[in-house]
Length: 228
Image 1: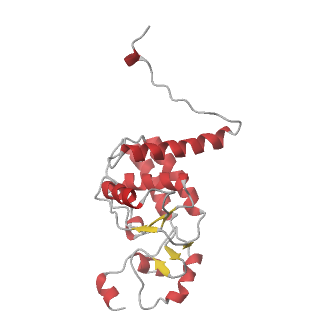
Image 2: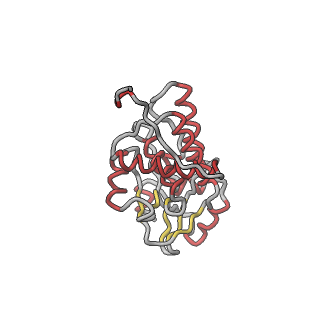
Image 3: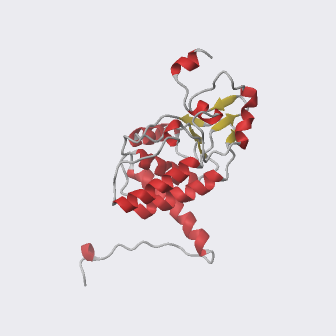
């Protein structure tokens, strides 16, 4: 009989007649619990896991309105800038979904930070598991050409970048919270009336023009904010 150390690790899953749906739900629960248990450290992803996770989350984001309508109480987290430890820490303090609803205010991706893809993956995992408790609007980091630090072979990195770009292109650009708070990544310019921000709902968010209304609310510098 082989020693226990040489025996293969066996993972068991319950299977029902609706195999496709059941396995997907089981995977969502499994991967999110693994990420939470792993703590604020970068998870050892496989290229297939990342591409699959980001692609499935993009499908959900694409079905949401460009202008989200949300209710309080909700935790708002912004400008993580690829700092996975900070993202995990804030979620630990506020509470992971479904204990607390969370709105990510963009600025999650930073091409200079290796943890950017991990931040996207954690948000994607939460979105898949709790689609009605996790929301993510687009920031300037998710609008500029998206690049990540190399991690796998070039072909795999290219596939992951394509999946991440599609996810970012599918994100809403603003949210109304309890009809009292307008949540955007950056701010509003003079020519935009808060009363007319509902026009964002009709915007094609997959191809933003940097001079358009959309990118004014994605990137507005401090001097412009002071003059409002």
